[in-house]
Amino acid sequence: MTKAVFTGSFDPVTYGHLDIITRGLTVFDELVIGIATNHGKSGLFNTEMRLRLLEETLAAELAEVDRPRVQCVVIPGLVAQYAHEVGANAILRGVRTQGEFERESSMALLNRRLAGVETVILPTTPELGVVSSSVVKEIAKFGGDLTGFVPPLVARAVIAKLGESTMNEQELV
Image 1 (cartoon, rainbow, N blue to C red):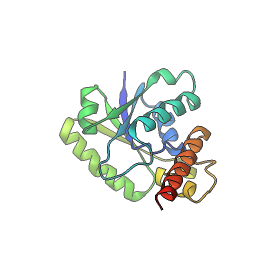
Image 2 (image 1 turned 135 degrees about the vertical axis):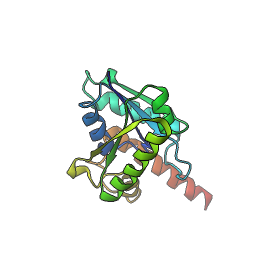
Image 3 (image 1 turned 90 degrees about the vertical axis):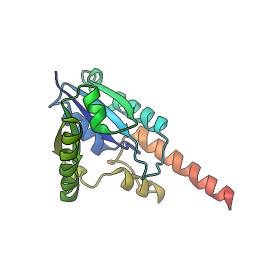
Image 4 (image 1 turned 30 degrees about the horizontal axis):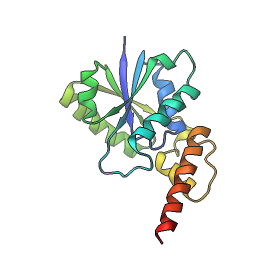
């Protein structure tokens, strides 16, 4: 049985994430989808909401046979350590650009040294190469259409959250 850990901020989960998850399930028997904590970023959603949106999105978007093969968790520490602790064979990473590939390759060497866990890097599907959580938030902030970037459930949550933050900013003025 092969198991991989796929991490990200998932703030919010995008079709790019779903692409890597779906393709990862063709390589691994089981995927642990981990929301990693990045102390350098302030998120749109808190960790609990990101976990809920991720779980609901996977329930709606994954084939029924794949759902039992996926587990969603929050990873509070080092991903390599966590992967080792849960007996994962690999860390799964998706890349969109050459720069991301170089960063992920360096991180793969570090993770192998830290915990003896290999990294499998999947290039994103070309039409999803422009999709990122940051781009989704920017498009939504200016009222753009999120179709093709995130599932409808996520689009509604992003729009609601951004509307809430705009109202809060206006209340402060």
